[in-house]
Length: 228
Image (tube, rainbow, N blue to C red; front, side):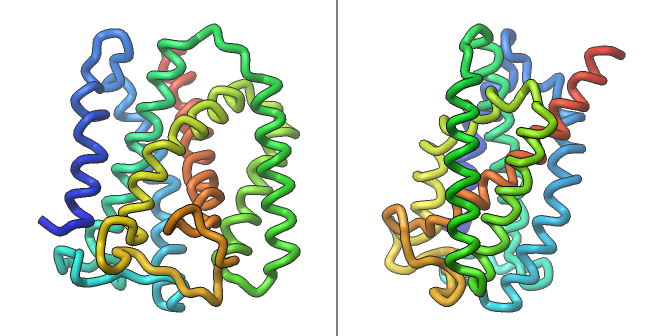
């Protein structure tokens, strides 16, 4: 097993085992989750492939199994299945166990900060492919959330903030915090250069732009599932 593979395995082990918890009963949502992950994962994989070809980022073969889909290692493809699974699982756990927490003001404040940061970073770094794409997409999603007034945005904000803990661990390992070289490397030409430990600051916005549409689709499908 590759190092990247072990990271993914340890990431999914807990959420998968706890998916059978009777109170959360996450297994009942596997169908809407799969649809959500596929709908968002495909364009993200295309984005990933394009940026890999442009050398915006890349992968260290030393820590990979050696199977590729295009220019993407198998582990990177599985990332877009495993990480969303874990994050949506956390979302459901928080919704189930903390249904009465009122976070509307916090979520609005969170959204304003993320929106302001993303716009500032785009303005200051218009030629950085990663900064421009991740931050632009984040700002668009936040504007949509504010305009549409999604009822689930406050719980999404809670989920995102809680997911920052495993995010820092997993992305930290992938970007070299525990290995001699990073498993996933980034071109300095296309990031701001500011990092959280070894993690490019843009990853905060990339993860937001990945998780937001998945939760958006998932919440809509879950509502239809309940009506049926």
